[in-house]
Length: 201
Image (cartoon, rainbow, N blue to C red; front, side):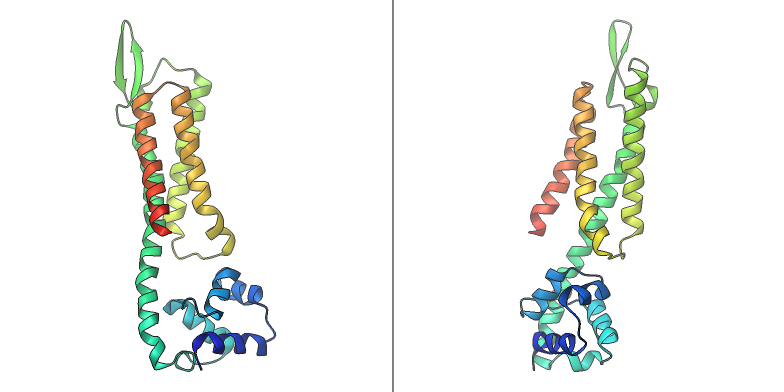
């Protein structure tokens, strides 16, 4: 019997819906549906968790013919774990705005290129918002890096849109305050995230 049929049989014998099994495995219902329809295989960690939840051995879940498919799935999974790592780094990199001379600041008749910490000609409330956005985005990046292996469905669902939303807010704020160099820097980070998302599909 193939893995997808075994999984479906074990799940129905345990009296669980796909949603309930997905919660126990820390994946989405769509992922369980994909496995049960034969359109994919779980990675090694998920396979071990399935065996534990269903009280069976890992060997009994897979036939010898399915092992090559599982190893191909592991290769794809490595790419899937690298992307969130890049997102965390890209979000943390925003702290460079504090030290890189990307902000224009009027100094007498000239405009000097200075880091954000040296800006003097900007309104205090805008500076507070800018510092707040940088701190929140950098802390979110640290959180993404710290929670690489955390697979709670809510976290998996919100982390990428939240990361992109913070970057978009940063770009819009810098454009609104007429800071072209800093805007281009953040836009580059946002476009890098977009490329990573396109490659995922």
